[in-house]
Image (cartoon, rainbow, N blue to C red; front, side, top):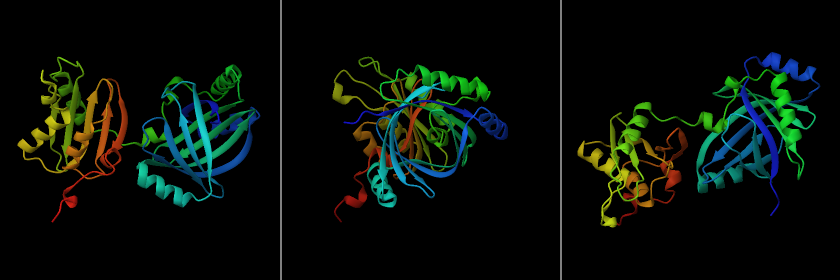
Length: 302
């Protein structure tokens, strides 16, 4: 298997795009023109996978892994040329599900082996990305030094730095009250055997909220998942169709297979499901992505 390519990267808000461009050019960067790009991110279990389409250029499938750290970080990635972007998009969307689409206008500069991206991202604003391309086997010291040098030249301050990707910034954030509700009930879970506390909070289409925690039992099969507890509360409270789900736990775990099916009884494939850890939302996906071939009333014999 080919070894992944490597970049040393940094992302920051661009407080003054005109000054950023002028300083970069004065430092010797070459202006390579403007790219209009559309990145479709798919739902995957690890790393990130996106199909990049761009005007007047080839499409590529980009699979990459990178820590969600606001400081300088290492990205490992594979690039796959895609001659038929429309077919690839249709196939991947149907099998994996689309997480989010990022549309941007990128002015591309080159400073030595560092790509400078001056990005205008639809729905987010203006950003600077620095990508120092590492040679195979490089120890990355020179790449890190160059990124740090550009960071100083462009006056990218700690408060400007951003973790994650544009896809993370564009992913819908959970309802604040629903998020707190899930965390609160997780703290009250009855888990004397596993010591793994889970809370689930559901928001219905009419704005009502219901929650439940996992309940364990010494006879292990008799325990109940947090999602099942929350659904019981929803039914008891005469709640109806789901609009949003938050599942909170120490490990930001996804619902088990049975609970994915239970949730699908009350919500369609577009229902947003947020998987939350102690400090942040780790993943936001959809019920359809979690349960692509769920069983429903339509599958029952008439």
